Length: 512
Image (cartoon, rainbow, N blue to C red; front, side, top):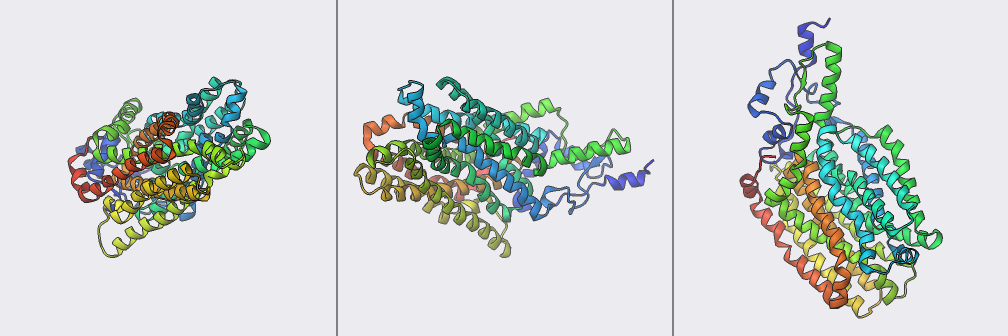
C-alpha cells in the first residue's frame, strides 16, 4: 500500500511551464472556461493532493518537452496527411470534361459544383471535428478520419453516376478536413512561439499546395489511365498513412494526456478521488455542447476572427475561382492538351512554396529578435505592415497580370507569372493571419482554425459556381480586375489590427 507521503509526492501539483508570450488575453481563465472549470476552484487545486499535474516543468509526458525528433516526426506525418486530403479537391479537375461526357451531363454549374462540393465538406466538417478533438484528443480523429477518407475515396473511384460521385466527394471532404482543422492545434500543443512559424509553414503547405499540385499529376494520370485512377492513387496514399499514423502519431492535447495519466493512477493507487488539473466539471456531453458552438462564437462575436477569417476566405475563394479558369484558359486560348493543362497549376504551387519559405523564416526570426531584445511577444507582431501590405498588394497585381495578359493572348508564361505573384501573396496573407490568430487564441487553436476553415471553404466552394458566368459577362481582363479591386480593398484589415489589435482583444473577449 502506498503511503500518504509517497502518494502526495507521486501526484504532486507543479505549476506547468507556460511561456507567457504564447498566450492571449485572459488565456488562463479562458483555458479553465474551456475545460468547464470554476475559476476560483482552480486556484485551490494547486494545494489539493488529489489533483494530478505534470511531474515538474521538465516532464517528458508534456508535449512541449518532447525531443525535437519526436515533435517533427508528428508534424511530418500531419503535414503529409494535410497534403494528401486536399489532393482530392482538384486532382481530377483536368478530367471533368471527360466525366461530363461519360455521364451525359452538359450543365456548367454541375461541372463546377463537381469540383467544389469537396470543399463544401471542408466547410462543415470542422464544426464537428474541432469540438471532438477538444474532448477525445487529436490522435483518434487523425486515425479514424484517415480510415474514413480512404473508404470514401474507394466509393468515388467506383461511382457510376454524377450524383454518386458528388456524394462521395462530399464525404471525402468531411473526413479529409480532419488534419486541415486540427493540425494547427497539434502544432500549438508541441511548439513554443519562437519555433511555431516554421512548423506552421510545413503544415500549411498541404491545404494550399494540394489543390495546385494535384492537377499536375492528375492531368497526365487521367490522360493515361482515366479519371478513376486519380481516386485509386489517393486510396493508395491514404492507405499508407493508416499504419504510419497508428504506429508513430502521438497524442498532443494536454488535457487528454493528463486525463489518461489520472486514470492510470486511479487504478494503481485505488484512489477514486484523483482528478486531472485540466479536467472539467462538465460531463463529456456538456463539454461537447459547449465546444461545438465555440467556432461559431469566435466567428460571429470576435471581430479579430470575423474580419481576419473574411480576408482569408475571400482570397481563398479567389484562388479556387482562378483554378476553375485554368482548364479552359490554357486549353482554349493556348492550345494545351488535357495532360499538359495540369502543368498550368505549377506556378500557383511555386508561388506558395516561395511564400512559405520566406514568411515561415521571417516570422520566427522576428519573434527571436524581439525576445533577444527583451521585448514581450505580442500576436500583432505576426501581422506587421512590413509583411502584410506587400502580400496584400501582390494579390491584385497578380490578378491584373493574369487577367489582362490572358485576355490579349500574351505568351502563356506571362499569365503564369501573374498566378505565381498572386499565390506568393496569398501564402503570405494566410500565413500571417493564421499565426496571428494562433498566437491570440492558442488554447482554442482547433476552434479558431475551424472558424477560419468554415468561412474559407464556403467561399472556396460557392464562389466558383458563379465565376464562369462572371468571366463570360466581363471577360478575363475585367473579371480578374474586379477580383483585384476586392482584394485591394481588404489590405487595411490586418493594418488596423496591427495598430488597434491589443485594444480590440481586451474589449471583445467573449466567454468561450
